[in-house]
Image (cartoon, rainbow, N blue to C red; front, side, top):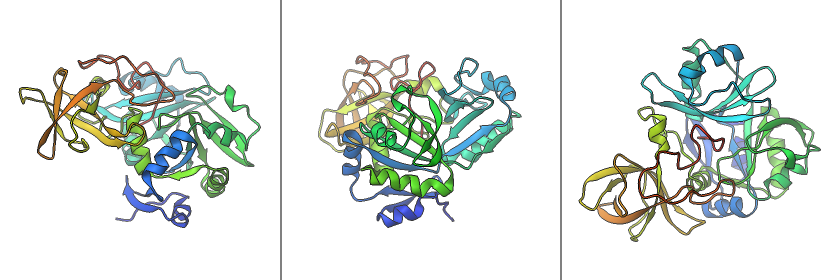
Length: 352
């Protein structure tokens, strides 16, 4: 299998990144140390190559609006120019074909598709008579408490006036980019859409400003702490949007290891009640955490089968940590509302 390369591939090699396959792309897993990269995003600023994501333009706003009620979980009629809206694609069985971000431009709608699903999403809309045109833009994400100040150094736009989940075109260090105030880490920051020829120069400007390069490993630990779903984990073709909205958070009460995707969850009577969808050791909280789907109501205490050992766990509200969203009050039953704040009534997060 020949892997695709983003325009930053050579930059990653220069920095000594460990390269792995992800969605058909050769992507950096980490550079020097995953935990150091994670903590850099939480305390300062980190940058990520998200050039594997699919950035497209819908050829007809009218056709998209005509099929939205059959295809999308959130409608687009009331979107204003410059606004971004999180959305999910409904397949014919009522499951989730993908989760995407929709951008309202002056005359068109734009979207960002997940890396492994880009062709699938193009085919999805083509089947509805809605054409999409890949724009060839590549995304560089800069995330963390110092991210806005770092980007501000290179543009005359007043970025503090830009609201969360909005975007605008700007000149960044002499390069034309489309900047969106979005991210996938639980921190404030920007995702910069950049023409391929300019990606290395924009990347180096951010590095020179003090941003730490971060790979897929840190991206995953950050997004789990932030309670943000990932396609193939919390979002699946066979699950409805309502099922994905019922994902809960778990913290371990026993020291038995890290709960990983697919680990089974039991109640006190040893009845199977669910499974872990994502799990990691949280560098911020210094403890194992997990997101999970339960087919039955959660008990006050449940057990995760970690390599043959039944380890006690308790439900905790999502997100585990976030500088952009407030934590919801703890519940011990599966809530009807979306725990991680990315359901039909919110604008936060993207399933990168």
